Amino acid sequence: MKKTVGVGFALVALAAGCATVSEQDVADQAVAIMKTSFNERGQAKLDRLDQDEAQKACSIPPSAALPKDVALRIEEINLGTIRYPADGRLIGNWKEGEKIAQSGIGKQYSDDPKLPSGANCYACHQVTKEEISFGTIGPSLYNFGKVRGSSEAIQRYAYGKIYNSQAYTACSNMPRFGHKGILTEQQIKDVTALLLDPDSPVNK
Ligand code: HEC
Image (tube, rainbow, N blue to C red; front, top):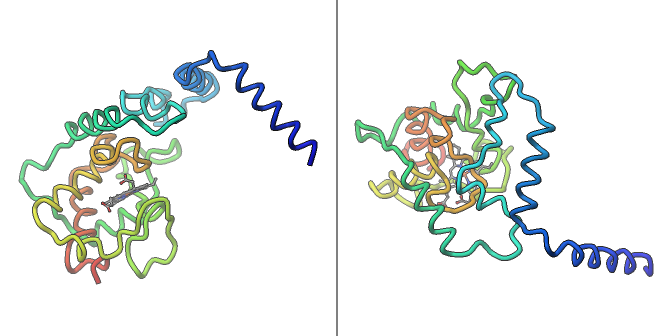
């Protein structure tokens, strides 16, 4: 027991000694270390470590909650990146959407860059009732359309959220599928259909 207390004091002393190093310095050092220790392989290039304004702001260790004005700015910038389909249709084919939601293929160095990527929605969300293997870092999307309806506003929200999650939640852990070129416009329509189409198993 005594030993544990001793270690605790040592850590506090160490933290106090480092008080002059800013959180930004620590974040910059972490990126510099990653840049020297990662190797490029296939489509996985080192430019993936280059951060945009939102990623930089979100990478600083949060000693306090993200300031409200910074969060609002991140959401505003990301909202401005969303490109809605020129044909005005946001709902595609939910059956294709289910395949995309199930697939974790794409963007890894070992994946064929010519093949379409999946979205791996199940890694973080419950989506349908049938699939019992899913992650829980994100909220359950089961019954999403049943609960929210499929008004134009909800369609635009669902499409926009998948396109760029940070448009609605600064520093979201959810990938920015359209903004980062992970999914195509048609794929985003298909996944939006999976969430909103009344025939989709999400709403059964
Ligand atoms: C790496 C984890 C991760 C992946 C992969 C992921 N999400 Fe998310 N998602 C989250 C988290 C965390 C949240 C809650 C925070 C937020 O709103 O950004 C969320 C929120 C959402 C929301 C908002 C829910 C609401 O109640 O308004 C929707 C819609 C959504 N995700 C859809 C999807 C879809 C569709 C996919 C696949 C195309 C997907 N997500 C992939 C982590 C993920």
